[in-house]
Image (cartoon, rainbow, N blue to C red; front, side):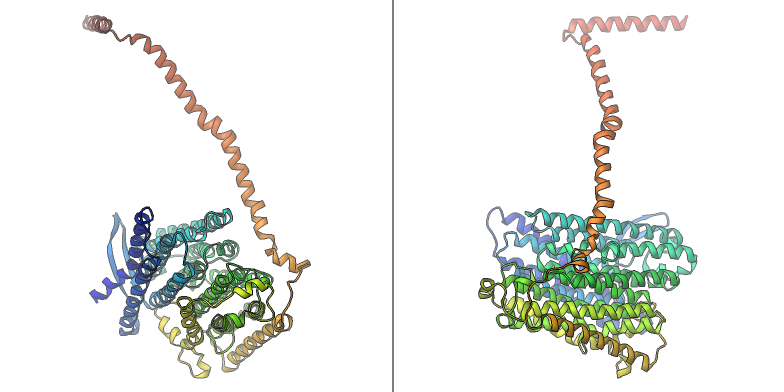
Amino acid sequence: MAHSTFYLGMIPLYPLLGAVCIGLLHIFTCRRCRLPQLVYGLLACVGPALSFFLALRVFFELQALPLESRFFSYKAFTWFSVGDLHLNMGFLADPLSSLMLLFVTFIGTLIHVYSIGYMDGDKTYGKFFAYMNLFLGSMLILVLADSPVVMFIGWEGVGLCSYLLISYYNEDSENVLAGNKAFIVNRIGDLGFVLGMGFLFWAIGSHGFDFLSLKANAHLMTESTILIVCLLLFIGATGKSAQIPLYVWLPDAMAGPTPVSALIHAATMVTAGVYMVARFSFLYVEVASASMVVAWVGILTALLAAVFGMFQDDIKKILAYSTVSQLGYMFAGVGVTAYSAGIFHVFTHAFFKALLFLGAGAVIYALHHQQNIWKMGGLKKKMPITYWTMLVGALALAGCPPFAGFFSKDEILYSALANGHFFIWLIGVLVAAMTAYYTFRMIFVVFHGEPRDQHAYEHAHEAPLVMTIPLIILAIGAVIAGFYNFPAIFGGEQMISHWLAPSVADQHPHGSFLLEFFVIATSVAAFAFGVWVAYKRFGKGAEEPVFTGFASFAFHKFYVDELYNAVFVQPYKVIGTAISDEVEPNMTDAPVTSASRLYMRVGNLVKIFQSGYVRTYAIYMVLGLGIMSLILSQSLN
């Protein structure tokens, strides 16, 4: 087992070493001679690939252990030790972290391979891959962390990398503003995470600061303390995973290169909040009200984002709002205490959402960075591989059986209804129909009908193999991933639910065969209805609509960004201007200025005694000695 724990520490180390090596090569070669781009691409793919193979090793070694003993840890070094506070840089492998490791490293590797083709010709090719490796390494630290503090290191690492990659094309001020927005909004959520850790450590930290110790001693906390901790931690999750009210940064994250969008939306950053809630499931199951907050925020976010997604015209923003909506489904799942269902949806979503983003990237690449779907059309003939793979991803996202998204989404909806949350289930079914509608609206407008931009259409072409091969692999994953948790009513073994059982505090619903069949039937009906409406409106071609009324309101995202700007940003700027113009000059600068002026005046008085003549200084010394002698003689008398 010693070898396994050592390899555990190497999993995040490989991408981090890759980031350092690529970064140094980029810095020292760009001034003299440029290395071939393929060198950077191959170096960037090595780290994630090695991490994936080590993740496989960890998975199989855990599988060989008895069910109740499926965990082991590795302490890299002692970070610091003060009194009762002992913190290690440690990593924990258990069923939850091992499952996350597998698809994060696998899909991360595919995205790196795809990026070799997509970023071809970029002037700062090396810098891009250094950031991507750093991003993946930070996510692996987050997933493998054996304590909340180590998790927070990875948490902040992915936040930093998201800023660097979203604002990667920093010549455009809009991209820089998008990066700033992501960074600032995430800092708001991070405050909740830090306060939650503080309360948690205050309550039971003296008994150990790692997850295993916290779980073993959770009974020492009062219900009110658990509620406070859970809500504060969830604030952190809403920031990282783009839930109400902190979801506004994620659609703007589309400013970065498309592979960045795939990495952020599919396999890494935005799923961190769901993972964190699942990791702390031993607390959330103790307080039903905290779980209900998670579930309702999640399902309302899913509904709101689906409304926005129905009216967007940017292919990447349609997918961005679908990500926000699917994250809402995941939180609804963990909120109704179906943690394995929520994580299962994280797993399936990684495949089909990475596929859709990379497919969208292939379309954008072929059309010379055109992203408006109303400038596309008829691309099915020009890009058959991209079309068929994106169609698979669309079917999975929309919840069509037997594709992956159907099984995971259905399990969340079944758990909600079986656990008595009727309205959460009802909203979930409505969102499923809306998802099918806006997903196939995108497919029909982009790939079917007649070309709307003849010049762009004539120059469109299929992406190179280095981009299409990852699409094919992800399409296969989007087809088969759902079968790993095949419903029990069809004789499935639900392997993922059983695998996660030692790590999450699932409260399995006591439903019936008829109830599950009813949930499946309504899910399929919602999918069929959404696709039918999309086909009727866009299946045979359509012109760009002119939005009015509610449609215009939804197209502008209910003006939430403008509201936040008016309520929070502008008052903050006014306060900042007042401080810089009034407070700083009068309260901060004035004392410093007065002290310096006083010092200068005293100096001017003293400098008259500094003549520069030695005989003058000798006279001063004689006079000084005389005065001192006089004072001493008076004191002795």
